[in-house]
Image (cartoon, rainbow, N blue to C red; front, side, top):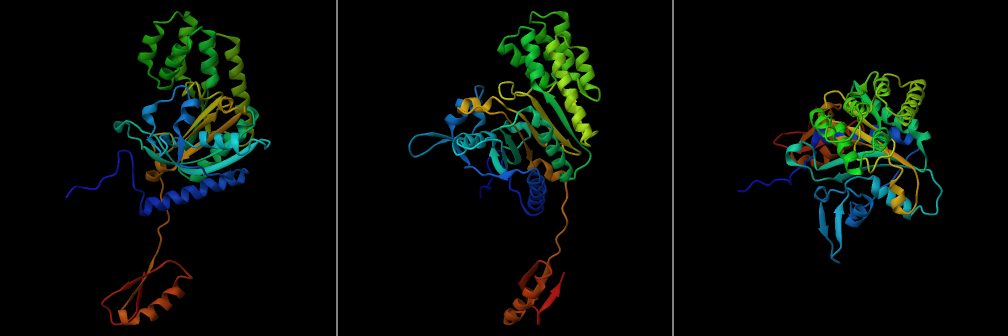
Length: 367
């Protein structure tokens, strides 16, 4: 008999893990509500063209695609940001921002089988749409409050700014293709590859040193390390903005709960300002990620700034625990079903009860 299997990257969430996941969702959503975010849900399926028209560097092989009855190409959503942006640009076209939305939805992305990540994850996050970078501290404190509520310690939030690398590439005269290649190597901290690539570019010694040092500008003293290799006033100006952000977060009581990583540079054609990623103890990958994406709405014919993040609940399950549930058992002979049923009704007022018809002479209760 052939074994019944799931498609690659899919997982069943059962019993204790399912309870953990629901508890994590409950804690996370409580934080979102406290910040004034309201729930939203969108269809699992979007037109493939929606993604293709918005993302210039779309990797088609990462989407689950299929055709509907009219021959239109569809795709399973890969995130919640684009569907929510679509809703804002249509159903809220005549409403004034800002919009605060929260969600907890399943998203799908095809990954290499050896990458060790799931193709199906539950993403629980927020989108703050219609407010500029002055709202960054609010989004970041919400992210740290969520990590506090999740309750896996220690945790930290790593904050970067893609404008730092974008501006450096511009000042150094790199082409768009060279800039994306450089940013990718910096983001992955591939130091040997980065050094070899920089040797192929026409850079000054100062510029080359900047790009080589950038992957190492993380943790304590990251802003000072980055400033030391800045080769243009525009780069120093961004550092000053990050220092001001640090001062605000510290004043709000979050000192020690975050750090900077100026080498973060994912998706230069998507993010436009701060980017951040959350890590917790005993989980080898980021469990929270987000950033500012002010240019997205330009492609949806309603320009608006926006910032958001999501928590991947599935990645947290192995690192957290849940309170054990005590279930009372009522065993009964089949001729005493009614008596056992009435007793179970009373006992359920105090907690969970299961009934089992068994080979017993009378109704029995056990825990």
